[in-house]
Image 1 (cartoon, rainbow, N blue to C red):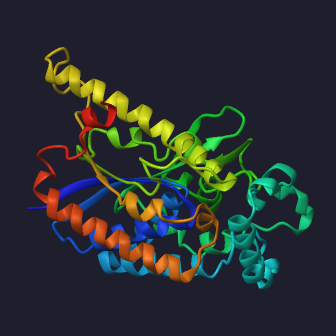
Image 2 (image 1 turned 90 degrees about the vertical axis):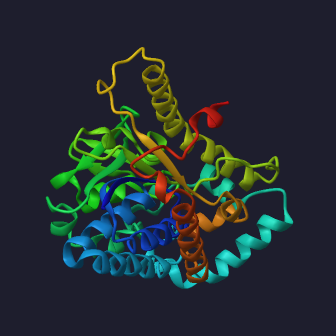
Length: 338
C-alpha cells in the first residue's frame, strides 16, 4: 500500500547536503509517494532538483538530479565570492579559519558590518546562478509529480511569498536562497526578495491543501537545541540566525498544536481544519558539531559527509516511524512546547 507524504525542507546553505541524503534515502522507498514539497533556500534547490529529476526519469532520475545539483554546488567554492575570485578561495578560507580560532573577532562578522554585496558594483556575480539555471524549468514547473512550493521574503513588506507552478523561475529559487549579507536582493516584478528563511523556514501552510496528505515530514538542518552558550562572535551570530530562522516555523507549529488540542477536546468539529500528522527528520548532534562558516563554504568532503548523515537520519526515522505514517504524528508538539 502506498503512503503519501508531504515534505517541508529547511534552508541552511551548504548544510542542505544533509537534506540531499534524506531525500536520496526516501526515494528508495517505493511505497512512499512524495506528494508535495515546501522548500526554502537550500531546501528550495533540493525540491526543484528532485521535481525536475522525477519528471525526467522517475525516482532514479530524481536521485541523479540531486547528486548533480550537489556536485555543482561543491564546485562553487565559497558563496561570498564571485566566480572570478574563486582561485583565491582556498587561501582566503584558510586565513579566515586561523583568525576565527585565534582571535576574539569574526572576520565574517566584521565584513557583514562594513561591506555589502553591492560594494562590488558591476563586478558582482551570484555564484549560485549557474547552478540554478542548469535545471530544466519546464520540468520544475510541470503539472505532474510532487507539487512544489518555494518561499522567499518580500523585502518591502517583510512577508513571505510562496511561488508555485509557472511562478517558479530561476529568479524565484535565487530569491529563496538570497542571504542579504552575501547576495544582492533578487528583483521579481516590482518587488525585491531576500532569503525565505526570515519568514518561513520552511512554510508549512501551503501543505494544508485538502488534496494533500495529512502527513508532513520536516527535514531540519538548523539545530533546535544547543547545550552550550556560544561565546565567539561567529558562534553568537550563528545562533542568532538559527533562532530567527526557526521563529516562523515555531509559530506555525504552535498553531498546529492549538488546532489539534481543539479537535482532541471536541471544541472543533473534525474536518473543519486539517489535522496534520507531523514528523521530524534531523540530526542535531551532527549539525551542532559543524562550524558556522561551513554553511557558506561547500567543501566537497563536507557535502559527502552530510549526505551520508542525511541518509542515516532518514533510515533511522523509517525504522522508528514507518508504521506511524498515515496513522499518527511522531513529532510530539506538546513536549516541544512544554
